[in-house]
Amino acid sequence: MDICILENSSFHSNCLEVSLKKIIDKHQLNNIQIQKYTNSKEILMNIEHHKYHHIYFLDIEMNATDANLIELNHFIRKSVPLAVIVIISHHTDYMPLFFEHLLASNHYIEKDCDQSQFDRRIEKILLNCL
Image (cartoon, rainbow, N blue to C red; front, side):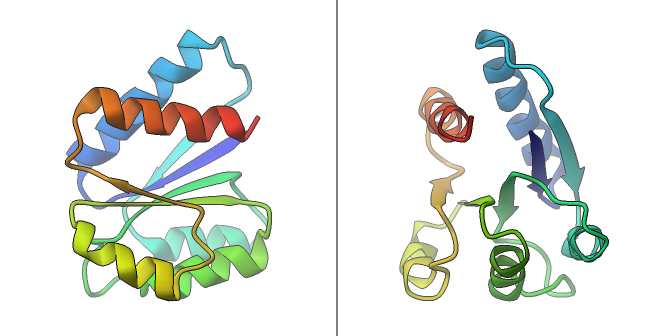
């Protein structure tokens, strides 16, 4: 299984990676690769070259020069229909936007929840993908 993390903050990217690795170790999961990206162009290029991930964790606060997250989300869904897309954000006020426009997303996780709750949500998503 391949996991993609799109996050422009190295701190948040590393936190998510640590959470994922704890879960992988806890459940003794094998053959899971985690790839981190800082901009969506790399992901778009990989998909165009048929390099897909099974789970995409996408930060909605990517900078303005990055591809629009709505477009990226729909491109992933069109190109990789069985992929799980997880939107991660500090802003719960964005939730209605994603339910209205990003029906292609499977999950929405708030970054500001406590670490144990964050880890439980990530764990549930990961285990449901197996």
